[in-house]
Image 1: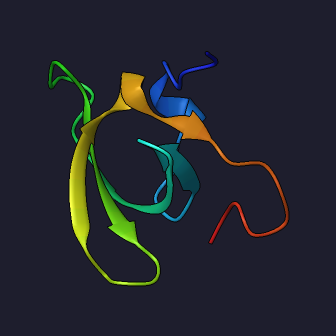
Image 2: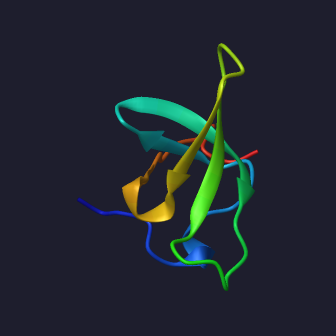
Image 3: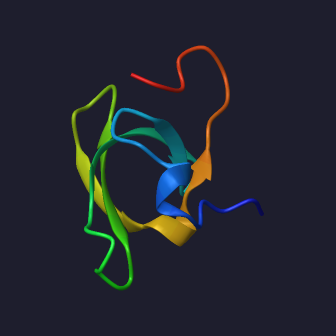
Amino acid sequence: MAALRLMTDIRVGDLVTYEGRVLRVRGISPMSASPRRVLLEDRETGEQVEARVDDLEPVDGPDSAA
């Protein structure tokens, strides 16, 4: 599993996989926060989900960034 571990690995607008779903990053906790958390949004439903950075996988491809 190639989890996103560094804050530089993820940016607002990126697409990531979390629990089998592809979601867009909408916010990132401050570097000093532990554990680091990310606010995610389902592109189809608009549902917002909060997750730990370590639980995310990057999505590669032309639509992977905003």
